[in-house]
Length: 477
Image (cartoon, rainbow, N blue to C red):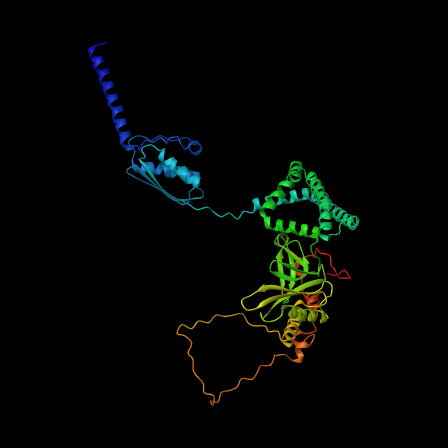
């Protein structure tokens, strides 16, 4: 090849290279920003793994980052409305979303985007209310199917429970009828009958649980009965204590319905003994409920066990009077009174030598079921006072010492001076003092009959079942 040909070839290559360079420069200036496009599955991959970075071409502008994130978030259809802005690499997200998980997904997506400095997530979570009742109807249908499956089991369980209940009632009635002559206490008889009927109920519950397929629960119920009893006993200690005391009182029978008793500071007629309290009708007509535990621990005085009662009082006579004469006068009064019994015989005993009197203790017996202790005592004290005064036996007051710090002034009285003459005092006895009973003392009869009449008219429906036997002839309580 000649030199001329080589020059022509070289010039053509230079022209072709120049054209390529020119076209490349023109394409670089006229074409848009170049960045890496994601495949159609990019959203799915980002949603499934937010830790992946979103590639962006280097030297991109903030608007390009905002545009890319805006299109990805809108493609998810989770955000409405949505606004993405980017300033100096900081992404600002605004909009609404239904769940916190989707809000966090948007933040992680922005953080994993290249050239993002920070993310300000201002997206608000606002759950949308759905009026679609399809899930509700689906659950109702499931519940209906379950009820239809459980209905035969429920019917069988109810039948078993009714049979167990009727059998327990029959066992309790049979036990009461069989043991009535052996166990006199109504409470103890009822307790034994209920104790014998409890196993029948437990067997019924066990069969129901077995039919339901709850074998383990059935064994737990039967095995935990004792434990439940202990827990209940500790939780209701006072109630259990009163119930146990009522059982012991019913067994010991220290009193019966209608007895006149005294428990501690309370005295009255027994009205009711239930599982918790003992009800008394006091002498002033009030009902007093005493816890059975307190009754069991207290000293019980039963005035109805022995109809004869003893009463006493004290009287003082002067030292100059004859004690023997005073005793004879008092005994005569006691023997003459119709309410005082001859056996045991009455007594008039010297009890104390006081500062100015000789104290005599007067003791007598009377029928407590027929006479009132207060009325008889009043009548006898009145008659003893009259008899002692009639016999000339003095009853001086207790000696009192009077001190005059400035001495006692004495004044002479002339004989002719008119001075009132003191008239002798009458012994203070009247014909009424000798009466067996005065209008104030009534007819000396006991208040028990009146209290029993008021007790029969009282409403004790809230006191519970009476567990005491009555001492009345008709057997009523």
